[in-house]
Image 1 (cartoon, rainbow, N blue to C red):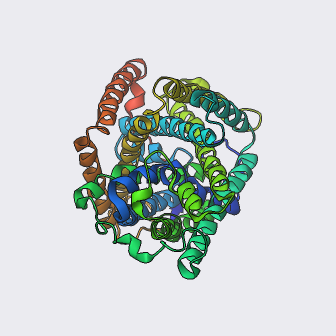
Image 2: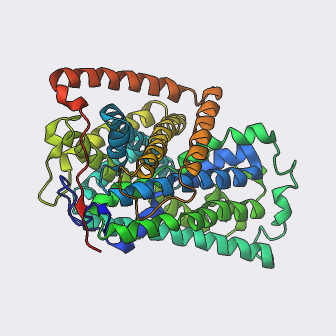
Image 3: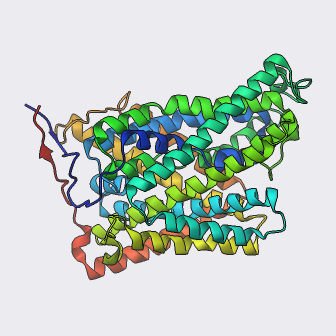
Length: 475
């Protein structure tokens, strides 16, 4: 007899258009994780850790794969647009669904601020006379307009944004390998694999300093879970989502580990600085006349793409919260193009705080918002992992249907990832510059707790667990 599964064509209560095809979901999965964390943030981390940063990206990449396989198993058990919040609500209780939904919304708000800040920095490469806050504001308004279109057009825009990023990274890897192999260009005389250890070793500032970069490395991987948000608007999620998740290892190996390895072989790590993209620096050293400008355009595209995705996800998460009575009911409304326009507009207003930061503290804006986004992202990932562990227990006990996309190793990899994320949180607490995000998150938690108390008082039924709806599928 067939196991009960959710009908993937019509998820109860969604109302979205399933307009994202396999090609678009695949590229959103690839491009969503290629943003300022790699293109800009890697510069500061190279300065802190040297070539050992490659190992940090590889280590974090393994953990990210564990997280995504856990999420994949949950998604194929019950694909819904508000996935993280919904699974937290189902397996840990209504409060955790409420807390996770709002925290994921916060993560994308501050990530959007980081992307806007980065975009302004990239524009300064060509037009240093334009204030950062002006550029950030212009981009904010342009992306807001783009997000009011249909999900099909959103998917197409993201497809081409991501294609630009992917093509540029592959091109840089090929050129870098050419420099190493044939010795052409201005960098040919100094480019060598030995650059990975020739300048004070592979861990030039010690293992401890390398580990301290993990919070920045984890920020670079934020948005890989965006595939989960697209579940409610994906055509045939049972095929598209596993394919997108299973390609994650080679994406990490190529775009993060591979690209950084080539860059650090071509240019010695001591030449990188925190305020410049390592990709732009590499092309400038190689001496390709328009290379640095081209790469700067590509990383600008990456920032705008990631911010665009943030607007997409925050609008959907606000609607999920409203569906559960945890946000104003007005956010449940969909526009004529079946997009949560009001939720997107509200999120854009809060992203505008990033414009203010770029006006008040332009030199520190990026660091502040990335640390807060990382802390919020760690919470989201922890909820995915804990929900997965609890789901597996229910499956083993025979109380829930098995997913068609089980995570390898069952719950073991989820436990490993939980320990790793708690370790990264401890590193954030040790870092005096990053510690501010924990204070912000403590204040955020207090505000959400007060909000929950108010909601319970107005609607006592909000604390009741609701059983998910399933439909039997033949075959």
